[in-house]
Each structure stands twice: as structure tokens, then as C-alpha cells.
Length: 221
Image (cartoon, rainbow, N blue to C red; front, side, top):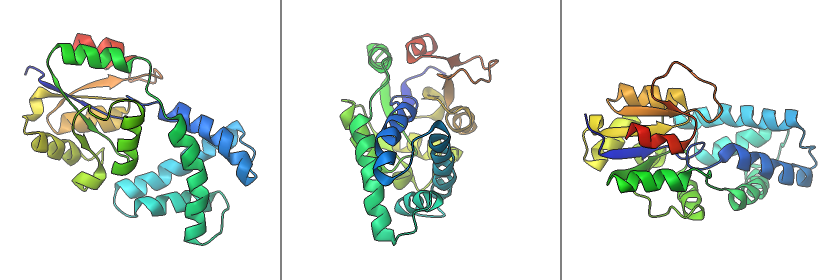
């Protein structure tokens, strides 16, 4: 089926979450008495994924996953104090958040073909809208999050619901994202077409619809 619309992931696809988070941690951790060693930053990432997974499955709220991340780092304060502490990290992260340098060219190519554009992201709605605005993409198109859909990737239902709200047939929508399990396999399970943006070249290398930069997306439209 011909592609008429492109559904982009946000973090790791349009926006450089990992690079931003690393810079933010190196700036913030010393202010709370923690040495930002590579091991500490890796641990932060692992802890974050654990509790974000619980949020994605709707076991806990978004604020609670932040509190649990801090508790895993040894902060034993009351919830309100934990929220204050996390605000310090968040300020560093949000002011540094940026788009990858291939985004402008990719979006230009998509628009040149007259295709519709939307975003399906696993972040909280408020924070993800702030990111898009910071990147100059506030008017990119519809944005769907677990807050809107009641489910998160890799649940194929998140794709089905987003496409239904877009009033499009799944087969005419192309999902583009950096997580093979979240953005490719789950999208295909919902009937969408999909391209894997493998920026870190982790594979699978035999995936026929694989690109290492968004500049390669034009060949799949």
C-alpha cells in the first residue's frame, strides 16, 4: 500500500534524548553530591528504564516513576522533597534538549511528497510537547502519548488507536523509530509499515527497511 502518512517516534528519533540526558546528568549530579562517572550514568539509565517500564504498563504514575528512580539512588526523602530534587535534573535536561541534525532534511523530504506527519511517543504529554516546541516542531502534527491513549509502545494497540484517531488505514502509515521492538515490530503487528532508524547500528542488520540516519528515509517513502 502507498504511504500517505509518517508516524515518528520522538526520543532517539527526532530528539537526542541520550545525548541530552548524559549532559544533564554531568551537570546535575555534582549538585546533589554524586560523582557523574560513566558507571553512575549507566546505572541511572538502567534505573530509569526499569521504572519507565512500570509506568508504560500503567502500574504506577509518571511522578511516582521519577520518585522511584531517586530512591534507587539512595534518596530517602518524602515524596515532595523527591519531586524538588528531580526538578533540578529536569531543568538541566529540558534546557539542553535538541533535535538531531538530520531532522530538518527528513521532514522537508516528507513534506515535499505531501505526506501527513504525526508523533507517537512514550513520554508524558506535557513534557513531550515542551520538547517539540524547543526543537521548533510544535506544529509538526498530531502528538499521541500514553496519557492520551491509555497504553504505550510496544503495545500494538497504541499504534492502532493513534491511526484510528488520525482516521487513516494502518497500511498507509509508515512508523519510523529507533527502537526495533517498540517502533518496528509493534507497528507491524498493528498493520503499519515500518522503518528502523538504527542510529547506533545495533541491528538487526538483516532488516530490509533499516536506515542509520533520517536522511535515508526518503528512499522508503
